[in-house]
Amino acid sequence: MSSRILIVEDEVSLTKVLRRGFEAEGLRVDVAHDGNEGLRLALESDYDAIVLDVMLPGIDGHRVCSMIRAAGLWTPILMLTAKDSEYDVAEGLDTGADDYLTKPFSYLVLQARLRALLRRAARGRAETVVVGDLRLTLASRRCTRLGTEIPLTAKEFDLLAALAHRPGTTVSKGALLEEVWDLPAESDPNIVEVHISALRRKIDQPFGHADKLVHTSRGLGYRLVPAETESA
Image (cartoon, rainbow, N blue to C red; front, side):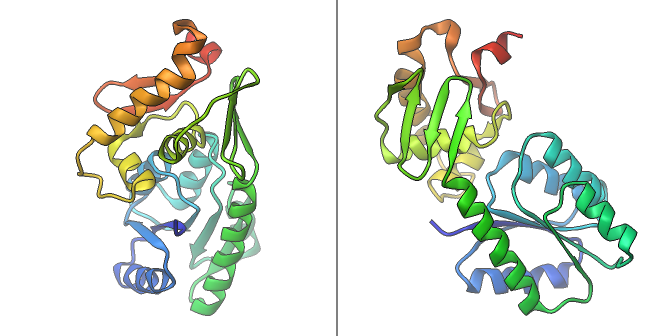
């Protein structure tokens, strides 16, 4: 599956240029034109990298970046800004950005820096994700709980990984349809519900109701939460 990029930029003309360029390289691209929408998308969906402008309507880019990091998400972030003082650069990096590019910039340089972030993200995803007593080894697509191996289908594993990458965060059915099945968010959500039921039979039911990991946020979506966190 191709990498998925989020562009948060209020300059519509620049956004169109970036989107066309990224999609021509085979990337999947989502766009937000203000900080509030950018933050919502970043928290709801699983991106391989985020291109984030600093000067945004609503929440500015520095706050968006710090709130993404505060939520426990470490998606690589490339910040764009018209400010080029060393203090501005330091502020961007201190809020959790991985790289910083000042406007006007060369698209070739942006491409190179984005590729570097995507390589870093790919290396990170080759590691293990742990949520409570659940362990996912992404490279080998192996799932265990309390040391017991749990066989999953390809889509069940992808769905579980999508939830595990942002533990405790409610992920909407639409976001899961886009990420796991590469379908429009408005597609029939029944496919998500069926696979969630299958996951619960495999990773929750054998371990007892009190230790369930998959929780429903009614009308919103699903979240993966360690039992001790949910009961705290």
